[in-house]
Length: 500
Ligand code: HEM
Figure: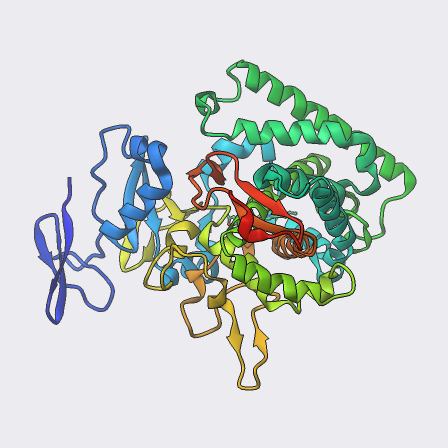
């Protein structure tokens, strides 16, 4: 096993690779013969590698590994050589400058290929580019604004069910909310007749990737009751989508993807233009359901819970959104700095996607090391968002850190592009939505949805956390380990008397 350690000895930062002292010119680590070095090997078990540590607590494992090994940290999973990348500049290189040297790779395809097929999330190369171009217009600002009414209406519906003094599970409520918003965004009015089919499929997808269940680790073809249910419900969903596509074609599809009323309309128009085939059309409908439902639900859960632990900042957001005559619109929430900061900080502290993966298609240099083609490169918003080099007091929910006060006293925060003010910290110290050409296509949709829902709720109720601490576990996404209970009070109720 090779042994590489970093020694800090005054001026010269030296490393020892395979027991030999090596020079370190600039940031490139080299061996005696001048070749760029590989990062030190992992010390996990033979064959299993670090699987046991990851299964026990993936988030903790990633944080420890990064702290011990630095910006490019090796680990192994069942013999797959993997590197956790936590240096923001190296992350930017992978996602932006050198993105053409990487693919999503084998691992996501093995886990999700049967579900997402050749949809946008997994597609590569020219197929991906054509799809992304065809679908872009569905996420332009005006189109996303158009989903605003549904986002507000469903938030009103959610809070209508709550009574003063209730301890509600905001994870459950947010999951229902995000499902309703996305299902309507996907199918428009057609959702009315198909709600149960779509809901059953969405639930089965979440269940299938719930790592608390040991059966989730079994391949899809093993006929467990869960796998059979999953297959049955997904088949029903695809059948339903196929029928809806046929109906829309018969009725005359939108002239172009940009003029459709909902995401399915965009996909049908893209298929008519030849940008995607019929299988890819269905793959993409399922992709949106998968990629946009649980992630948004988690983002809303963590925003509401975090605000429920910060009554003072919650009050500030309430004053801000209470200043409008009615529930604020998509245009109005863009002018709500405290609300925006509340959401962006929740996505920092508890990023719904804790990590995602890339595979270099050729040897690459990262953080001064040479990595061969075909390894797994893990990019972890979770670790970087908790790194105290970029974030003061990283474990604390502090939305104030996002707010800038100008000399005239005006308070602002990034509206369209979340992230730290330029120059304050590296750009990729914050990347809950990924980055570069493959950044989340639903980012604007999600940020709007989280702001509208939070504004609509806080105009009607005060929230107080029942459990201040949250236990999280890394599944496909960053899920809470149990219910996330929050006590609801009418705005004029006495919050202080809520006993939790
Ligand atoms: C808070 C909510 C969300 C978070 C945190 C989130 C996060 C992410 C991240 C990190 C990626 C990049 C993955 C990678 O590079 O491997 C991604 C990609 C993607 N997201 Fe989201 N997402 C959210 C909501 C949504 C919504 C609402 C939709 C759809 C309506 C959506 C659709 C997608 C799709 C299709 C991709 C793949 C894009 C591509 O490869 O071109 N996401 N998301």
